[in-house]
Image (tube, rainbow, N blue to C red; front, side):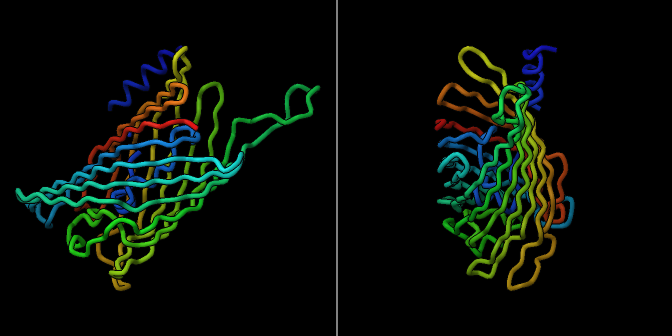
Length: 304
């Protein structure tokens, strides 16, 4: 099987996605995804579309609401030197909800996320015995610490919705720690990321549950005379604790979701275009009352 067959298979499969979890990314605009496929240096714009269905009641025929989350982002991954980097995401949220033929909209600046990263490139001894210098092994480890600021508006009146993620912002200072391992050799790359989010309460004594997330991406880089094409597949999981208000846990507000993602990234010298499609594999959100649907995202970056 040559590289063109591999490319064709991955692209075909991609039309069959890595979405964000309900409590974090619907309110932070996708902060769980910190960079592009290869964690290269860039500044750019990204659009994320997510949709959910929430059942308002315990019966099969209970009314359901349809929610559409549109997020427009400025994002970037900028080096300070060869080892330290800064990433940032500035989202604008446009949220729409239809329930019993009534439409509801909420929009505005979302919660801004800023992270600092340390990148360690693992080196190895050269197989050439005449050389004393170490060479790149293809492995890299990134450690990140960051904060999500309460720049987006949190509305207490919206907390009575079945889907509490229908908010422009969380109204709280949240903290995230992340570690990622990546490896690339012979145009095949794989990266694995784990993150933990510590969420604080806002002025309304409302606290989204802490969250653990992981994701694994595998890609194949096809080099052509005009561009590099990198189709990829991904698998991710998000697990979050119960929401609390006034120190009390709200029932059926914890949960988990597993997602699959497929997409492609195109690199044309200094311009980078990417997109992915995501679908849930397994989920248990808010006692089964909220269902995550398929989602997609696209981005356009300028490589630094």
